[in-house]
Length: 290
Image (cartoon, rainbow, N blue to C red; front, side, top):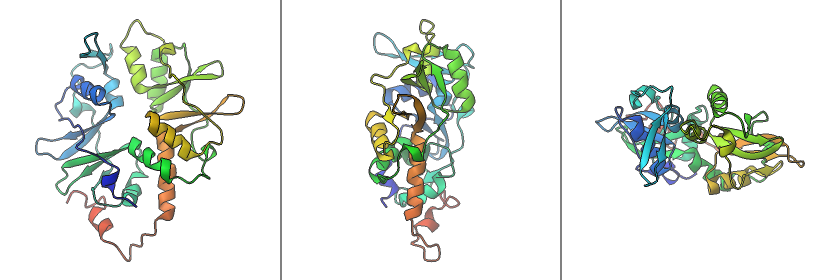
């Protein structure tokens, strides 16, 4: 299996604990990323900030001149900084370790990024869900289909529903997306960022303004590798699955594709701890910061 270095994005954008949320929002928008590693002054990684935490407090909009403008939500704490919202990093990796070794640690974590560090825990790269899904598009076997993964009771909302109600539902579930319906027809997928944008615009108070064009759906029975390829090509995080009558049956998220790939790699792994190749000893979670 390829090393982590072949899947990671090198030299990722990072922030400091004292970085302001408006600055974080600018980084997220300008670089079209979802994760911001938090690095101390000595260069060591100390946390991770995801976009959902940032968008829960405000959003970066762009003015007519193209310059980014931060807008706080009405109920937000305008003094919030990275150190208030960052979470501990659950998944570390080393550039040269096999990806299958990283899988052993990542499969038990719901954190959607792994930070790649050197021996001093200095940041050298990041592996995100997007990178893993792109790999899954070629690695997953064709016998795995939408019937083997996904959520059969996804979060949905009427496409003309109130934004605040939609935000509360997605926030309460700890989800990143909800499916927008017009009757039984799937008309779009709203992300955390989409809803945050609408919350900041008084003139756009309804989810009807959040639509995909085109709407990326697949029929029941589609292979997971085809779903992964669709996600990777269009950089989308959720794909609705429809039955032959066009009814919503389930949704496939990036994490669903990741879990399928992780299970496959675990089955293929022939690692024997009695005959170590050395890499697991060096890069186990208990020694990753040595």
